[in-house]
View (cartoon, rainbow, N blue to C red):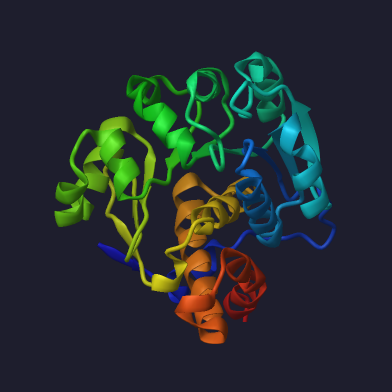
Length: 290
């Protein structure tokens, strides 16, 4: 097992040319949000933008567009049809796939609602889109019902489950996963040829046939709703800038955890918020580029 620390992630930082423009440093598509969970899309988008990506495009249900667009004026938007639950409608699948093919990376699932439409979108994205994709939250829960689709995916896939979501993906109890997190993560990555980011204390990054990477940053103050959306945004931003899936995951979990550590120093583990993690991302980049 390899520990993820500043010394071995510094070399993973995306290179930024002096003549860079918003298109040369990556386009990220976020397929996120639903009624009552607009904040997840906001957190993901803000974290991605703080991670250096040039353009963030948010595909959102029309009901949350006013909230998200006012909260993240730096993003651009696809305003799409929603179903009765306020989630993205599967009728927008063709539009979403077309946008995904024009992007450098996709994040799917943050703040989505588990329903038939979300399941359909998950299946469609994996089987018809060639752009690398990060799947989180209810995107994972939707995929858990169609796990065979992972083996048919046209794109490189990163999954970011916590232990409960990992249990649904693997059909193994959360208790057994907790007893041997390394084996659970590695077995799943090997079986489905994906990058598996098993969140929690000492977050693990596993990929097929390779040594597991274990994160050394982060703290208990990050155990709050929205923290995972921030992680997905960071990783998505890095992936869109050209990093390999495993390297975007590795650098992403380090930055996320280190920003959380800096937030805890300022606000304590009791009072820190996911927005505080985002606010400390620039300080982590400063540390890494010295």
